[in-house]
Image: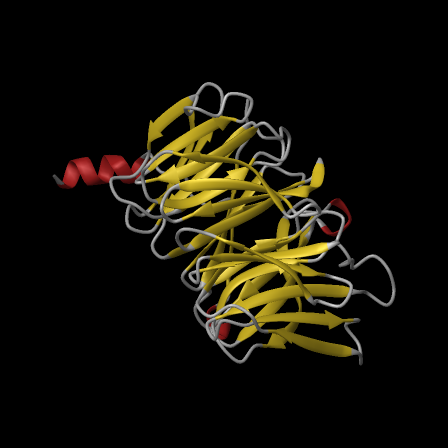
Length: 322
């Protein structure tokens, strides 16, 4: 048995780069910017603070902590606004954080003297995900209270609420059409809404509990879902059944995300203790790594880098589709 365990460990990929953050406490969530002009900016959430960090990619990889923000409760989700940029002076930084008190806090800073925090109340249970749309017109949030809420970014007034049949797990906009929103429910239903007209467009159901879903950034017809440990790839032009099914984990739970080019998909599960990266079309395994206490995962906007916060440290892996 020992020989088998040693062989398994030898086949695991070590991180390309590790950043220790134990002085701040245990990391609870991370979020890279999904926008080109702020692609090296990311957020790191802790029990009662949020770090704004910058990924510096030269001859070597390094993480620079830019500043920190106080947060009164544990972060449950983070999202960076398209308005954020560290290129301009003063540097506008806008992001939101879901908290364990069921509130969303919108932070606005110029990284100097001007800092504000607006509190959004409306959810009555844990907020599982939130995301700005690419045009920065809306902020979507979904919760264990069986709703998804759409907030106008002009004044952060609640624009609309869509009722769900179970807790909302994931929300995702597509960069090709910022009016369309994906909402994944815990019960296994994936819904699509037109936020402008406030109407339902489509829903698909695999009849198995769902832990995460993601929309391929490069193809608006392709989505992925993780349901009872199975990775499903869907083609929305033929949404009756998934086009691919791949059993990844023995139990429910975990997080998935397409690479920005849509060729790869990464999946992590804390119960299984592994990170796995697959080629979407061939289903070939490109990378397998061991993890201890992972959070969600994030891809860099441009480079083939995937990041996971594992307990007190950030771990980066470099993987290509070739």
